[in-house]
Figure (cartoon, rainbow, N blue to C red):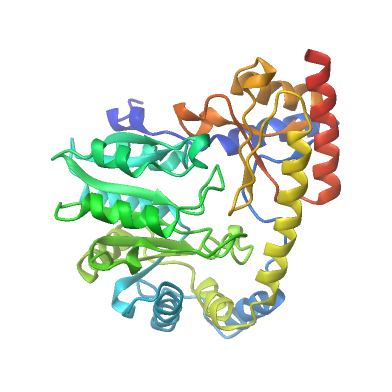
Length: 388
């Protein structure tokens, strides 16, 4: 069997590869502390589960409109209008199975061969993968520790060329937990003003923020018409396995993305969409409690990592990841990732899993219990001390 050449351009998400390796060690009797996978360790709130059960029992088991059921599209439009201070019509909303399809479909619909897309590095690896798979040219914008892992607006402006068709931003960010300020967003908006450039704004962690508030570039003057907001239910409501996300975008693009949905998935699962309405319109206490617990864990793991020789860790403002600098250990990111898994029983991700500018860093997800985080820190400190 001969694969199409485009398959050589397709990347992967290393977290799942490390998870598989960790599971193999567990099958051999090893105890592994999982800090590699980016998903909340909380159960989906019970009211959302009950809404899904009611939908199933009520016969909501058939095809739905490709762009999502009207009730959910309306609920999302209302939610985005309120949280981003913009006017959103349900026709500008497309519901998809997870967040990644919005990345894929937006790039597929807008990027021609040779078009340039600027994306954050270190950043979510599927950005680069999808750009290259669709024939675009991936242009990394470095996120540097000295700038709290926020992109440099002047550097972004310098990377824009006549071939630039899209800029991808992610705030709060995976893997760094960095948060773009309103001033940053104003600078990005100024950089793309007057140019045929669309902004894909990945806001999947918008509700998981600890200091300040979330700002969307779509709320700035003139930006809604050229912004695609990516959001969903996985992170905010601990619904990773439900596979439900959405995009908010100009109506013409929403129609194109709906056509891509018809050609790929037909529609998102019916019962999950009814559960999502309850997620948006029902009680939000569980979200607040989850974020408060993440804040406790963030503070604990940051303080713990900074007490380990060779580690230096910023305190992230959002998401549920830390991205410590590990150059003081004298090891590369991949070497330390493998050492911690093999000898400490701690699963983490090398910073290079998120791009070349991630060298010298590790990503730990603190979506795990405090006792497990404490155990991981003790093991890391012991193994690093032995190698000193």
